[in-house]
Length: 413
Image (cartoon, rainbow, N blue to C red; front, top):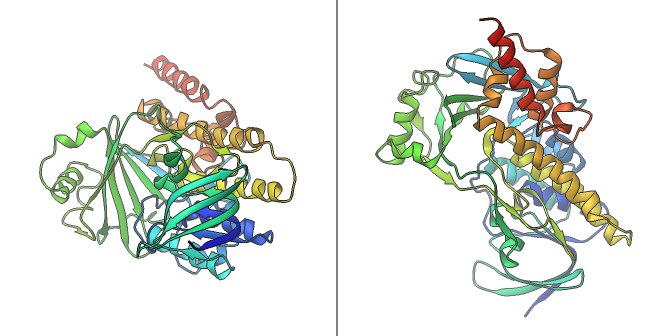
């Protein structure tokens, strides 16, 4: 069997894998990527956050992505019963990027992959990892191509950025259920010919349809828009018919979108994504590190997926370089702890979104600008800035604020 030798094997050619591969490659190490499917391929997670721009910049991807002409994104808008709460990234508490993009992921991921290949990192597409043997930190990975040909790759280290594929967690039984309840999404892309709002398309819009059910609206520079409903699986059972009939009926039932989405052309039959929340026992081991959605995928509501993917890969890549240079790495302190800081902060906001805490905050009258700027930083992806009280005390700060708002408003009656 053919055996190839590299310094670092990266599993997955999405944003997590390509960011890690680029940074490690720039440090002078021999890197190879294996990817299960052929690009371009459809994937969800189309609204980026400003924090990921730092990772894309360090990986050397920004100029290439700019060439794509993706829709620039400057904030997030939340809507409930016609009331609007706007967050502009330029108002955020944390110093950092104040814009990012809304992207068609097939094009975005292909651009990152093509760019890292142009840097000298080979990608083997339609190549499935079937087994991994570790000998200390060194590994021997068996892969199979689309024609059934098997080969092996020796590596000094593996970065698993396989996303939903979760290669190492599944091979070594590391997957564990998340503490978030199962949810379902029904979504498509539409030709958004009725888009007339002056402030679009430079932000994502999140609409509260009813408690526990929300809608994303992500306009693209092409004039098309991604739109999807998210809620408990039982919510969708009340609407009968094929997926297109279901989604059209749901759109017609939402006053904020009914006219805009009336008779829109759907670019593809609506798709379903469900029970996506999962986690793992550990983020690293002797000879490997997990990045991106392989560590934990939470929920699409705050567009955290690509940010957690790219930032975790940015961090992991630097630690892999240290390791390969013979330096000591404290993976718990330098990787797991900061990554869990980000994951847990987003998790607190996801839970506060679904239990109604954020409804109270987002749609309150007379919001305090300084507090709003701190929350805005989280929505921009700066979940590692612990100088921000709404990051440092993410598990209590939102509930305390909501109670104060409720008490204040009750005193006015």
